[in-house]
Amino acid sequence: MDVERGGGNDRADNKRNNRAKADEDGKPVEDFKEGEVLEGVVKGVTSFGAFLDVGATRDGLLHESRMGFPPPVLSEGDKISVEIISVDIRGNKLKLGIPGAKTAAEMREERENRTVCLGGLPDGVDPEDIKKKMSVFGPVEEVRTGGRLPDDVAYVRFSSEEDAKKSCDNPPSFNDEEEGALRECKMLKDHLQHRRKALLLVIDEKPRDLQRYEIKRAFESKHGLVKFIEFDATNDKTYIMFTRGSGARSAKEHKSMEVEGTELQIVETTDDHVKAYQNLRKAQEQRQGRKRRNGGGRGRGRGGRGGYKRRRGKY
Image (cartoon, rainbow, N blue to C red; front, side, top):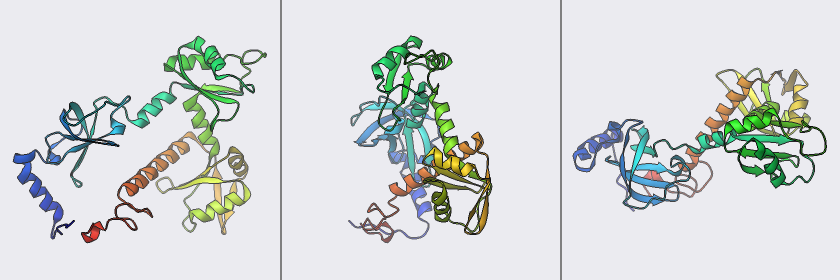
């Protein structure tokens, strides 16, 4: 497949070409506004979403994560209302979404707000028994046990957040002991926040002369396995996420830690630290996602080793 190699200012040429085609094929993407709702025609359906003609010079992408749940079944030629989620002028792209549809992250957060974490359950408790006893507070959608959860822990998802909160105020008993025998009965979002806080260690600086592997090696040799290390240049902090609470507790018993001749000061972990760490991880995952989509890294995708050589104008 031959690719014509452009010269000069390609971006300016593309913009002029889009303007020239606007009257014939539609408006250029820069004429669309985020939040605008319009009608689109499905031009193609893929495993990750659909491409729609919304009157632009290029079809917009309706990703499956923006379709809501359950997602609509689309076929070529269908007409649906969509919302402009973002306008990428540089990449000449439009991202679309179903108006009012929640993203996967929003749906996950909404489920967490309706879920209760039970800890300290007796051995061999039946999930149906859990559902029956918790149903006195309201309809229960799901009870999760086993898998990656500890043997004495269960997640109970209610139909409403109000019912979930009521169950935490007066938890039932699952054995012959009196009420309140459970070790824990709290909202899942609070449980996860508490767990992240327990696993996170905060260093009161961003070391200038230390690499992640050096910090990781030093802490793992004395305390336990480390899952992630993130440098926060904005707040001048280093966040160390352990895989187990015992490792984090062991490290937090010390006020400092010497790594390669540098003394690192350990400070108390706060909710603000947890929030800052989560934002850093989210940004890191987004960068990795873009890198995979663009064929970066060691894979054999577009632009990677053994992939398409786009920069040379060859495929």
